[in-house]
Amino acid sequence: MRKPVSKVTIHPPPGAPSWGGPENLPLIYLGWGRRDFAKNPLPVHFDRGTNYFILARGEIILSLDGKRIAAKGPAALFVDSDCPFGITQSQREKVEILVWVWKGRPGLPELQLSEGGHLLLDLKASALDALKELHTRCRKEIAVSDSVLPSSLGALRQLLEVEILRATRPS
Image (cartoon, rainbow, N blue to C red):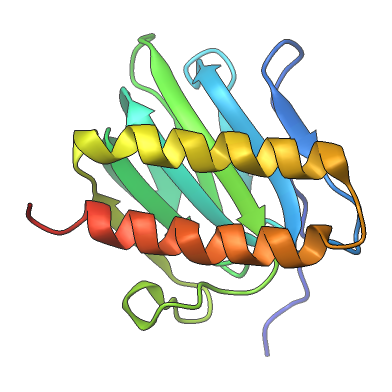
């Protein structure tokens, strides 16, 4: 039997933009902008939700379930809340990210994760503008924070999954 594990969403160091939401929303966390995972690595941990991690630019080293995997942007990484993961870099270089942490697993069958699983996908660079726009739209929606916020976030999540899936396909 598996030992219970505490789950936590780790926020970046001061000065790196992020948002953490209340428990009643489907969206738990947003992170964006430049990061230096050589200076401030993300320790291996279990997150409270499913990570949708877009590596827009740069190269990182993922620690996923005990394995080290190099990833170069543009790429999308989905990490189930039951998968231990962390992020480092072998050298200091510019890394730009977009992160959403959602409750539950992806809805599209092509993006389904097994319990404790992860999925790493190469993306077309031409898709990054649409993904950045969706991230900005999520930030604008949480600023409104009205009675339809959970529904609008759910719709944006569906669109995000569609845009990521389209970005993996040949033109």
